[in-house]
Image (tube, rainbow over all chains, first blue to last red; front, side, top):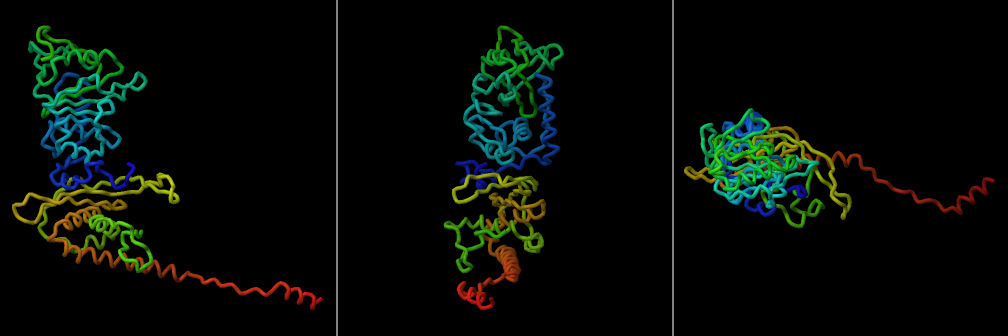
Length: 227
Length: 181
């Protein structure tokens, strides 16, 4: 912070900050309990890739974006984080809400972002465009949350993916909708450059699915890639 | 303790800043320095509807300073600060508009930050402005002025007027010494 009077207003947003705030949602009802519960859910999702982890609602949320992803952002971000928002989220009250409650910095360049949140309906950027970190500092890569329309993990699903890797005992079946057609290829490129690479949370309105960079992905049915 | 904010006239010798801060900045500066006793006095209207946007939280804030007119900014030190934000619905029935009040105070008093935020939200609603000005801001101004006068008096009582006795000429001293010899 270089200007003491821009404590939670961005340059360019300062003029309308006062009007925006009057319709803003309040954030966690209990900041300590709430953020710990959500952090726990996010951690569970990452340690069991492909498993659909339910996320309780314990915050007053903006109308845009899934509740699970909004709460995850609220729990994870702080003033040192740079956040990239997809166009529909960036234009909505979500940007003001996250700026106010977490103090995070919004960036327009994907490669600068520590966190990224892609709203439902927005085109997903290519995974290669995110920050992948370096071999010395792989943790500096972008962590990305993607709002999905639907996902299910039924083992008998024909389409979808078979996931393997650390955190999965044998094989995990997952099928999702709302991702680009070539997502599986993008993901395998991302996975291949381990230890570098991005980590994903796929979000449903009330749950999260972790997809860390260690997870290997194959089409369950070769005919229907990346459903 | 006393800022150029408080100085709207030149009578006390301190020039006001070139551009006066907005009315809101001025009342926030005033409220932030009010003692809790005055802030929690009976000035709050009945039947207000408000909720927290950010409940009071205490933290540290880095304060920056400069040395000299062209000095670089440097981090002077950290202050304990309590802040909160609340949303207060407008008084008119059926209106869904609201004002947002913020309270930033030094120290750890959550009650103080809440009272400041309530006053800030009310002062933005024209129907309450006059009452809050009369019941809260005036007493605070009077209190701060009295404190300033007291500090001034304490300082004045230690004032020493130095004066120098004119020295006699060196030549005269020599003459005296010669005389004595």
